[in-house]
Image 1 (cartoon, one colour):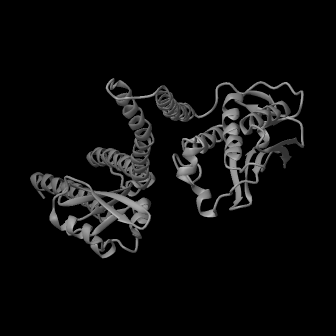
Image 2: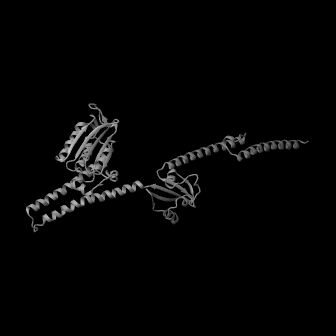
Image 3: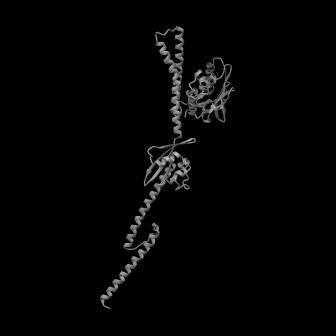
Length: 413
């Protein structure tokens, strides 16, 4: 064999070894590509070691990015699940792709069972079907069902996808209704005295109108009464506004209960003018932590109501006792009583059981609303027991934390 042949044979052998070497690595790489996982990536030598090392680094970066994206997606989904609004993702055919728990509550959607279902199969309200088919989503759709009001908005995004957002606006509508009623009630309460005053002013200003001194005095007295009525209303509105402006009273201090109750009883006797029998009993002497001004305002409202709605010769009883560590202040009367259907609404602003009688006795319709807010600021509750013709008992229940033993020195919280 010639030298050339030997050289060629050696080169061929080397090439064969190199080819086999590369085929071995290619085969390993091909097998790995069937199930590519970072931890099973084959190792190589020489140039393959560098190439596979670079692939390893690429895969690590990719896995890190995917893990970051997965974590971000998980956080996003957790945030959407926690939203107080309902969220439903729809595809181009308005089929459900995903929904959060709030949407499940609003629409009765089961995120797993209803996946892929047309949303109109689950939300069959005619207004919603028309809204969805119309394709005009610039304005929200308001749906009212039973005791719930939902505001729906469709937002288009991505490739023909839609996001259905639902918000429970029941409380907002209730507040708006209360606000409108409040303005209407205030206007109504002020209308009568303003009309009376303006009428009398016009009459008294007309010098050509014949008027005796007795008539003038009577007109002035009526004007003064209407002015006092407006003043009482404004004062009660300011008191109510002050109570609503902060969560807790700023001037809390220990109040001597016995002296406090006796003072209220004296005020009741003065208001009664001897027309009623007024009694007061303190079963358990202690002190009460709270704002003396606010509690006096609340208790006085209850006492004055008892006097005003009890016929002459009736009885009004004030009492204080401890019950399970808490304090209970009660005002009982033998008056006209209240029907059961009225009791849940007594603390609403301007709510009156008998509008005519309330105005005749000087009520503004805000007294028990003031009581409610003052007691709420002291963590206290108002309990009412009444029966028409047999009188009423209004009880204020304080938690144990508000009751202090006599003589204990404790600063306001």
